[in-house]
Amino acid sequence: MGFIVNTVKWGVKLGIPASALYVAHHHNLFGTANEAQKGVDQLKTNCNDLVPKEVMENVPDVNLSEIKDMIPAVEFSFSTDARSLWNKGVFATVGAIANAPTHVKGYSQDVVKYVNEQMR
Image (cartoon, rainbow, N blue to C red; front, side, top):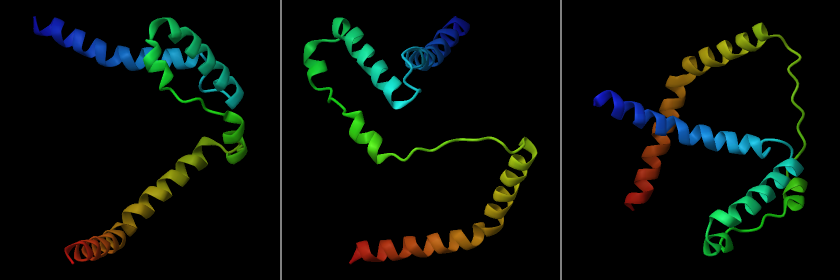
């Protein structure tokens, strides 16, 4: 009986996020801003039949043309090889570990100052 309960529990835990990811990918929500807007519009038309009108009235409309002007365009390029990316990650990790005592000391002093200010 425990095996069935665990299987159902993990099936639900994995199934809900997987289905949400599938729906988001199916409606192209991870694409460009225009593709995402079309996907949101498709979801709204599909949800109108399933979701009560009271809930849909509270969903705000988003004007993506205003948001697109605020977000800068960034192009991703992976022209470097994986070895140099790995080395950069190793250097960053080792540097963070080496500087950790200094950062912890600084953060602890900030916490002490904050607590002193709150106690006044």
